[in-house]
Amino acid sequence: NAGVTQTPKFRILKIGQSMTLQCTQDMNHNYMYWYRQDPGMGLKLIYYSVGAGITDKGEVPNGYNVSRSTTEDFPLRLELAAPSQTSVYFCASIPGGGYGYTFGSGTRLTVV
Amino acid sequence: GQQLNQSPQSMFIQEGEDVSMNCTSSSIFNTWLWYKQDPGEGPVLLIALYKAGELTSNGRLTAQFGITRKDSFLNISASIPSDVGIYFCAGQRTTDSWGKLQFGAGTQVVVTP
Image (tube, rainbow over all chains, first blue to last red; front, side, top):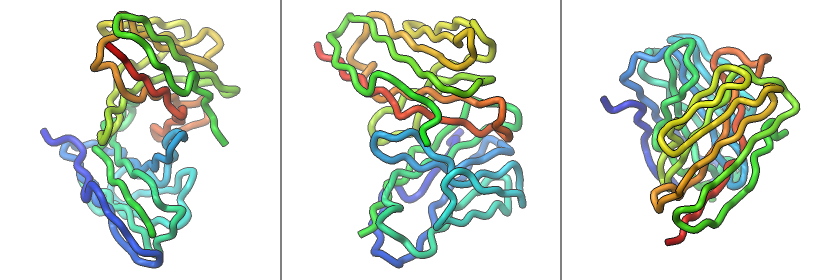
């Protein structure tokens, strides 16, 4: 099993550009999450989804959007990239009711 | 603000030494988890704790869920070079729903031969 797959691994964006970070899981997990990781900080929750068609904001949602049209995919959209969005982004999933997240390997984004 | 206070921030130890780290919070937690992150990778779950007072081992790793439900610690015994990485505590507060977790800032462990 591939688990949680994130693409791309690295990306450099210019201020004001947009992009979509892709996340796919093949474990039939209902719950999926997007976190960002900044140096010296714990992971912060951006958005989460408890099933296809259901999404909600986390702790730091500003500047991001998500959609969940299928169980497998949970893309994260940046519409107008800002330097403050320079970070490492992790997607994670769990079956409903479990706590041991399976994480993807991350996307390192730099906004210049 | 930071919900979980994880310490120490970093540790430089010699191979064979034991390592201890802990997480504390002002909130009460239902679940404590410990993850390890290798460079360029996502965190990987090491140990999960579900009951106050629970002590759980996974090989050379031992973790405990504090009796007050506001803290947890992780011990690594007889460290080896592959223990290098960042260790994160995480937990679900009683007020969290839908599997959401709070994360500590991480402990960077460096092991020297």
